[in-house]
Length: 56
Image (cartoon, rainbow, N blue to C red; front, side):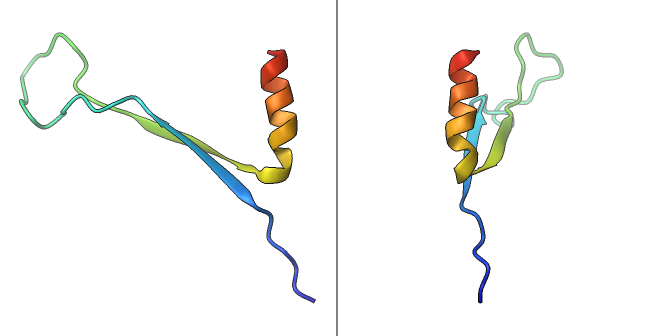
C-alpha cells in the first residue's frame, strides 16, 4: 500500500522591486532593495490557520 503525501500550500509575498541594479548610487535616500518570503502549510491545516487569523 502506498502512503499518500499531504497536499501542501505555498503562500508567497514580495516587497516589490526597486530596480536595485538600474542606477547604482554611493548613497541613496530610499532603500534600493527588495525582499521575498513565504510560508508552506499543509492543506489540512488551512481552516485552523484561517480561524486563528480571523480571531486575531
